[in-house]
Each structure stands twice: as structure tokens, then as C-alpha cells.
Image 1 (cartoon, helix red, strand yellow):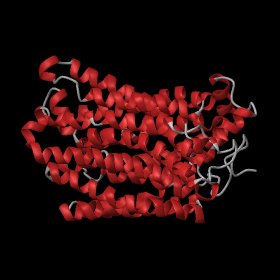
Image 2 (image 1 turned 45 degrees about the horizontal axis):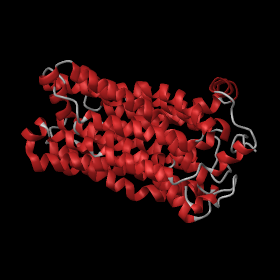
Image 3 (image 1 turned 60 degrees about the vertical axis):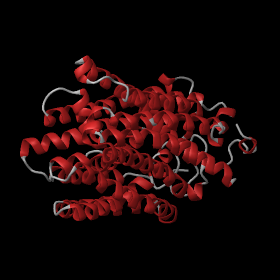
Image 4 (image 1 turned 30 degrees about the vertical axis):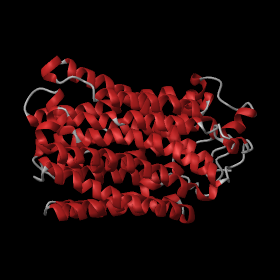
Amino acid sequence: MTDAANHVPAGEPATDPRIIRRAIAASAMGNATEWFDYGIYAYGVVYISAALFPGEAESATLFALGTFAISFLIRPLGGLFWGPLGDRLGRKSVLAFTILLMAGATVCVGLIPAYDTIGFWAPVLLILLRMVQGFSTGGEYGGAATFMAEYAPDARRGFYGSFLEVGTLAGFSLGALLMLGFSLWLGSEAMHEWGWRIPFLVAGPMGLIGLYLRSRMEDTPIFREIEQKGQKEKSSRSELADLMRDYWRPLLVMGGMVVALNVVNYTLLSYMPTYLQRRLGLTTEAALIVPIAGMLFMMLFLPLAGALSDRFGRKPLWWFSLIGLFVAVIPLYHLMETGLAGAIVGFALLGFLYVPQLATISATFPAMFPTHVRFAGFAISYNVATSLFGGTAPAANSWLIDRTGDSLFPAYYMMGACVVGAVALLFLIETAGKSLRGIALPGER
């Protein structure tokens, strides 16, 4: 805990830029670690499937993508566990546990012996570790976004919150770059034998850095205010009952928006390398270059989109994104079919249209719930929707293409998700500039 952090009065927004920067770093590092794991798994799935699964390349890859989805099916359990705990014990305490679990499980994936060595225990161990990752992530993302939102000034919550997503793309890009770099340096044979494991081991130091950054912060002033007033929930059971009785509407609205957010997210970021390589015939290296270039392009616009949401509101940016993606996704998928240059441009434009959603997560979703149920409301709604429609998107897209022979199915899937998000957005309460303090619903005071 720092001296500067001690000087923030309970209940007052953090105005010292140094404190806000520390809060950004503490939140974003965990997010970067989480997405680093997704990046190395998604971009190394060809090597992972060959090392840890039996069968032909196509079937082994489908099994590996299915294992990727398994971690998402566990996320709601993590949300149910960590969310209420974060509202009772504090955001900081939960975030310390989740980042250690998440980083530790990622490191262990890189240590699993090959299928040729231990047989079916290889995929079993991978599944168990993905379940641990899913359970920890069920509390990590909602907690990090809540932590960020409750430290940021109301008038600039969108701008500061966008840096959490800079951490998302930075972690994902780092994972992808490591996989690409090692594949170019070591070659295919060495990567299949042992090289794919190295990026997984990097998660260890990342997790320790994140833990250190979080240990230097005090819990959010907004949480400390309700703690001092005795307004925290008394038990997980009573909190869950309050959520279902009093806040079912924001739970449903957020769930619908997350369907749009994460179907696009995981289709673009996680499934795209597999799609480009197996469906469009790009080389392994080219299939990694396309999304890496696109993500670096997206990172440039995240703070701008966050700042625009502070000025014009969250809803106008979401409307722009949902409508733009619905209209442009099929033409841009056709553009990606033209070759490497077309794939880079098409992905970058899809990413640009997606940025307004991604940039405003940390400003929009925590503000949908009052302080005493904020962590749990976010974690439960976000993770249920993500587990059903987001993390399953890579496996679902691959299966649908196999069954129909239509390589445009990822585009159709994204269009359907945008329709669901648009319906939910109709019922969203605008909270740009609104205070998150207290136990009243933000935007309805």
C-alpha cells in the first residue's frame, strides 16, 4: 500500500493522476495475463493439438478448440464464487487470488507431457487446467473492470477504462507475437516437439508482476465508503437473492450486450488464425500476422473511443459498432478471401468497427449495478453469456463450416450476435458521467 493511496479519502473519486495510473496498471496487467493465455492457445492450437491430442490434424484441432471452450463453461461458476466474495471482502483481495490461479494454470499447460508419452492423460490434464483458468477468469475480468471503474473520475471513466482493453490486446498480441517469433526462429519441427511450450512459461513472471502491482493499491474508495457505512451484503446467498429480485433487468441487458461483444471478440481474435489457415489456405505465419497487425491497429483507437464515449455517451458508440459490423461483415470477409493483403485490411476494418464496444466495457458494464452488488452482477451476467456464446464461438464456427461447407458462417454468426446486442441496447440506461457511489442504481438517481 502506498502513501499516495492512503491519502484518498474513502468515498471520494481518485483524482491524483499517479493513483489512477497505478489502478490502470494493476487492472490491465491481470487482463493482459488472461488474454496472453488466450493468445498463445489460439495461435498455437496447431502445435497444441498435435502434441496433446490423438488423431488426424483436422479432428485434433477441433478437439483442441473444444477444450478451449471448456474453460468458458466453467466461468459462470467462477463468477458465482468470486463475484459475491469481491462485494464482501473487497475487489483487491479477490484479484490477488485470481491472477495467481490464472498465471499458474497457464504455466502448467506448458509442462504437460505429450500424448505420445502419457496417452489420454495429456488431454485430461489440459482440460483440468483449462477449467482452473476458466474458474479464475470468472472473477478476474469483472473484478478488474470494477476496480478500474471505481477508481476513475466519473467524467473520464470511458477514457481511463479503455486502457483495460489496451491490456487485453497487448496481452493477446504478445502471446501471438511470441508464437509467431518462435515458429519463425525454431521452425516447424522444433515448435511441434517443444517450442510451443515456451510462451506458456512466460505467464509466470507476468502473474507475479500483476500481483505486485495490485498489492501496492488500496481497495477502491467507492467500496471503502459502503464498507464504512455497513452497506455491504451480509452473505453470498442474500446477495444472489437481491440480484435476482431487484436487478434482473440489468442482468439480462448486460447478457444480451455481451453476446454481441464476445461472439465478435472470440471470432475475430481467437478463431481467426485457424480460419485463415484451414479455410483460406494462408500459411501458419501469415495466419498469425493478419490478426497481430489488426490488433495493433485497434489499440491505436481504443483511448479515442473511450474519450468519445465520455463526451457523447456509451450508447451512440455501441449503435455505431453494432450497425457497422452487421452491414460490413460479409463484404469484409469476402475481402479477406482475396489474399494476405486483403485479409490484413479486412481484419483491420472489422477491428475498427468493433473498437467502440471493446473500449467502453469498463465504463458501461460496472455502471449497470450499484456498489454493493456490482462485482457479482458483472461477473455473473458477463460470464454466463460469454460461456454460452463467446468462448464456444471458435468451436461452433469450425463445426458449422464443416457441416455446411459455407466459409462465411463466422460472418453470419457475428451478424446474429449484433442483432441480439442491438435489442439489449434498447434497454440500456445511459450512465456516462454518472456517479457510481452508493447503493442506488447509477443513472436512475
